[in-house]
Amino acid sequence: MDLRSRRIDTVRRLGTVSLAAGFMTCLLTNSSDYDGIRPQILAAFLILTGIGLRIEAAILERTR
Image (cartoon, rainbow, N blue to C red):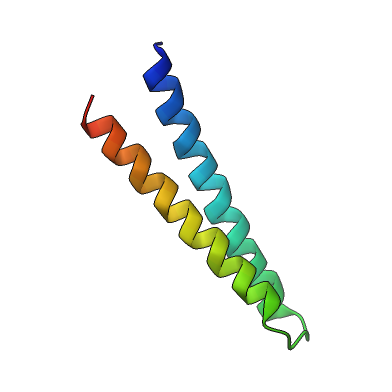
């Protein structure tokens, strides 16, 4: 496995972890009685970061 393939796999995995963390934050916040907006902002940031990382990995893999 070359260095570029390892980088693509790492970026894809980080994107997946970020997406999962964002969705879990959103689910846990919605199921609790907390009325603040800060966890929702964190969840949105994590989800957008995860989507961006997954798109980056797809572009890098396609240009191989």
